[in-house]
Length: 140
Image 1 (cartoon, rainbow, N blue to C red):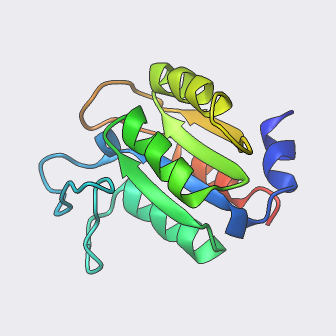
Image 2: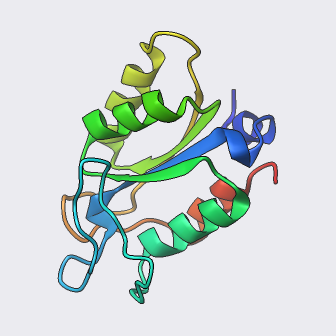
């Protein structure tokens, strides 16, 4: 199923967004790691892709947003929230491994729509923000 078709059929309230913590600006980010993923402070003023995408997903009514350091935490988040669809932004390697892990979940398997990073690496990566926002808004 094409990504736009995947999300067209799933209301935002049945979706989650997975973001890699490497999108954060490493030198200035006020967020902190936690057992549930990287936590952005409510009063964050950082102008970063994570903040913009997180705010957009939540304003659209997404079930949740996880800013994960890797696939294990992202998979745990999916199991906890049981979404019908997952929007995942990450490097090619993490997206491939994550899609495989999701397909092997017990119970209902969510649809997965992905967008690879423009620049891989583990620090200060980049995403096409316009494409990411468009993906989040599919079907809304």
